Amino acid sequence: MALISVVRSEIVGKHRLVDDDDIMDGVALAMLLPGPVAVNVVAYVGDKIRGPLGGAVCAAAVILPSFFLMVGFAALYLSWGTMVVADKALAGVLPAIAAIILNAGLKMREKALQGPVDVALAVIAAVLLFAVGGIWIVFCIFVMAAVVGILRHQPSNADNVVEKPDGHPTFGNGSRVVTLFLASCIGLFLFLPQLGVTSILGQLFSVFSGMSLLLFGGGYIFIPMIQEAVVNAYGWLSLDDFAASIALGQVTPGPILISATFIGYKVAGLTGAVIATIAIFMPPAALIILAARQLERFRHLSRFKAAQAGIRSAVFGMIISAALSLLAGIGAEASNLWAPAAVFILSCVILMYLKKGEIWTILIAALLGVSVL
Image (spheres, rainbow, N blue to C red):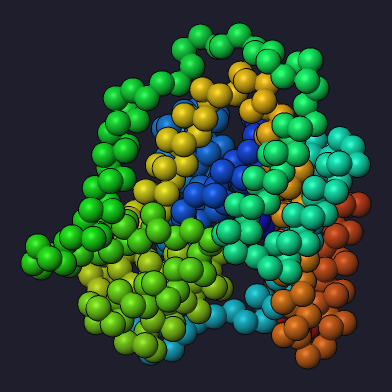
């Protein structure tokens, strides 16, 4: 959600390339599909702006900084046998990230909340996600919000249909190629071990590409699945090395799935890191673009628009819930609550009153973490 908040600030607030409705639609779709939510939302936004090529460029660009950092961390760790982590900087950054998420959510409230029913939907979504969580809760929240949105729709307008735009998306050759690619990823993941393939690069691609399409419910589902594959099944990493990959994935900016870069580097050097990174991020990004373009077929339907309006209210509640969950986690782990609370309040002031950008907020929080926390 922190990355999505920064994307919203740049793409909606500064450059006005899409609007808040598009961002919330992307979040809703990404939360229902497998893979890292933030990267998938970025791919969705890129597709909105410049089509599939735009989606690919945006997804690649948002991953590259984390990729290079992880390769550097992996090289240092494997050379020295120790992890290079900025624990103090991270302690300062986490409260700032909560403030960034909260600020982005508040900026979206005008679009998401049009009345008391929308407020109720947002509160219910936030409470359910905060208290229970999980992919099935997300699915149930979206179904509930869509039903409420449709029921609120005026009966006299229920059958109104806006004229279909010319050239609306169809299931053409491009969609068929993407579908075949995604099916191949799952097939390789399931059957490559039985084929006796010994190529390390082939095994890396099959393991990560297939697994990326099974990661419903966020990146943390990745941890036990990938441990079973790379530690127990293939024996590529020891438990210590695997723990290091997850820890570095936590402190590296970007999704925790960037741990795949560390694993690829450990197994097959820089080429392995590139293959593993492409395999873990490309299939879900391709899937969300495929799904989004097929959903364009229904955007002209009034009931579909009503369902989307309800879902956007729920997404707003989920964004606020993400900020609250992060704050709760910080509070549970902190021995002294005053320092992270001060960083959070200062970050809110920087963002909401001084109107400075998210990058400045994170840099100031990191410096405070190193010098004070």
